[in-house]
Image (cartoon, helix red, strand yellow):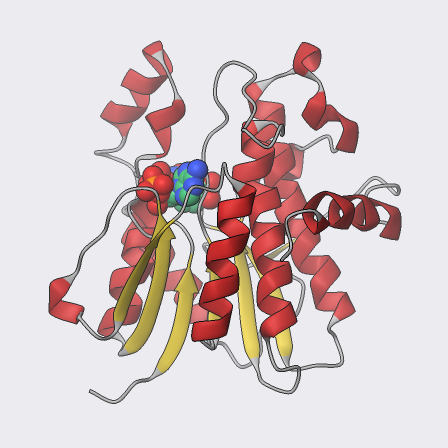
Length: 270
Ligand SMILES: NC(=O)c1ccc[n+]([C@@H]2O[C@H](COP(=O)([O-])OP(=O)(O)OC[C@H]3O[C@@H](n4cnc5c(N)ncnc54)[C@H](OP(=O)(O)O)[C@@H]3O)[C@@H](O)[C@H]2O)c1
């Protein structure tokens, strides 16, 4: 089979990520994906490459994506890995609130590595999987170290807003190049996202999975937008391919915010 392109998908071991892996393999792509659990697809040997990584470890994440960037060139990148925030305040070994690191900071670091290695004249499309939760986020950069004010929903919605801001920021920064960024709200679908939850919420979600939209539907739409020649740079799309609004408090979408985030990530850049 002729190779149709190359795609990197973070979090390809279940849910939306796994459907994206299968979809792009069916389309004839070389697919590189990552996760903590092992994923083997021997029928696609030669076009499917899996790397083990835990985004809770930024040094290991940096090392792996440095290696991936040196070994592969991509046409498309999908920042999909994510978790629902744990019920109680939890930090990674790097000292960041868990959701902030897994959903946002690890992807920011990966993006820095990818963009540093990417030839600026070569087209590349990057999408971050956000959630409708970004619309109710109350962004507060200092919040992520603050155990006292922890609320799981605030941590999750904040992490998803930061992904949206990251895509808008890089869309602007690289606007003179053929690199495009957008965010995608995949709607609500059945997956293994409930794994970080406990008690009644976990049981309700496990039951609900059977009646929720299949992740293959959200994967199909993401792929259609990703390859749309008229893609709007920096936009947030939803599962009905509508462009959604982003309203921001003035201080967050500023250079100062990204300077602070760069400082966090810099320590892990090789
Ligand atoms: N399900 C929904 O209704 C919904 C709605 C809006 C947005 N989303 C977003 O859609 C994306 C995919 O989620 P999903 O619903 O498909 O859930 P899922 O089935 O739990 O998949 C999440 C993926 O992220 C990876 N991941 C989680 N923690 C990780 C870590 N510490 N290090 C590296 N990889 C990690 C998982 O891989 P391993 O477990 O192998 O590490 C898995 O492949 C997420 O960003 C989620 O926020 C989902």
